[in-house]
Image 1: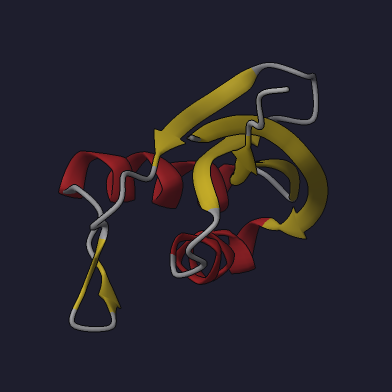
Image 2: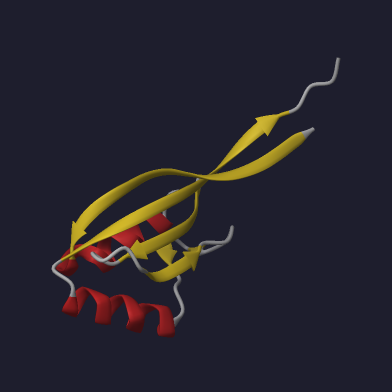
Length: 95
């Protein structure tokens, strides 16, 4: 039986100007299930779930309101932290 487990794997710091490009890059990774943008003061600015099928024809499809929020964060923040949550397949074996 296969079980999918989501857990934070890593966080990276990016400049505000490169925020949208980095999120699109992460969304294209098959194992990334969620991206959280964390402001310098530690507050979660936006939590973006990336469901299976978020990629259509090689282009990342994100809702316009999400893009607007990310753009606003990028305009006002010099640096933000991105927390990347990945989904791994784990196989359960019974004895």
